Every structure is written in structure tokens, then in C-alpha cells.
Image 1 (cartoon, rainbow, N blue to C red):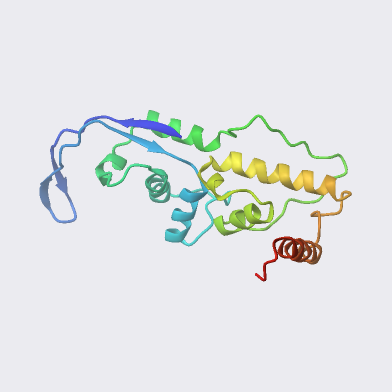
Image 2 (image 1 turned 135 degrees about the horizontal axis):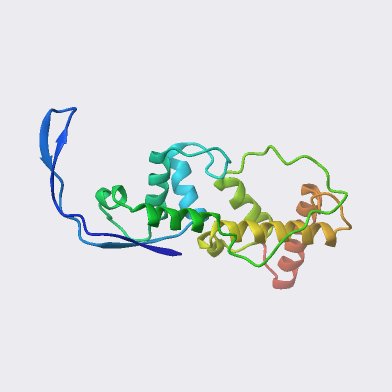
Length: 193
């Protein structure tokens, strides 16, 4: 989490060229807002913008400002606060978004020369990876870079555990294993469901 400070904004008279009239901005006291770059924030943003946040394409100023709204922990923060975030705080936010938030470094193996995946990573795909790797849902509140590192670690460890077989167990193998495990538990507990 990062906490940013937006300085006090005194009310002032401004000109609106579209309406051709003066208007008065409202007074905003100094405001501190807490931000979390998490799967939850990304999910909120994607549901509004209908596009993948983690895609490497540049975001517009409007999209980034809206993402900051999605990251905000506090409720009912006035729009004027977001419109007056100083450049120094914006730089801190960008640094926070790019921070790996982990000591884990996954080295590429020398024989791993395959091209990067073209799969578009959306929040739903990350949730799928969490489910597939049995990562608890409370991790959706982690910094997204830390969560993605954990998912990578699970992938590497699963490949090693299953003899380097690409992707670990196949879906069919996992389903068979889970069915057998469930049947065993039902038999042990004398349950039918």
C-alpha cells in the first residue's frame, strides 16, 4: 500500500470556455489517500474499461486517473482530489506500480528459448491461476507484482514436481486426481456429497 498526500486546494474562480461563464471551484482540504495496486483494483478497472490492464500498451491520462480511483481504499473521495494530485505524488504512484514487491527472481533456463506468450492477461485469468495453484483468495489484496511472482513460483515448482512436463499435470490428470481425492475423503467421512 502507498499513502499519497494531495495538498489543500483553495476555492477560486475559473473560466469555462465551453459554457462561456465563470465558475467557482470548491475548497478541498489536504487529503491523504491510501492506494493498493492489487488484483481487486485491476478487476474494478477492467470491468469499467472492458480491456486488459496488464497489457503493455500505454494508458491515457483519463484511464490512469480512473485506475488511481480503483486503487483507493477510502470511500467517497471527491473527484477534485484526483484532479489535483501533484506530479511528485504521481511519480511515487508510478514507482509503486512498477515495484516488484518481492525478493524472488525467476531465472530463465538456458533451453527456454520459446517466444513470450501472446495470451492477454486479464483479472479473470489471474483468478484462474490462483484457483489452479490453490492460492487463497485473500492474496487478491496483495500487490499484483507479488501475486504474479507467487504464481510463477508455483508454475516452476509444479513443472519440477511433475518431471518437467510442460505445465505440470494435464487438466485430465488433475481432474482424475481430484475425483479420486474427493472419493477417498467421502469414504473416510462416510459422506455422500
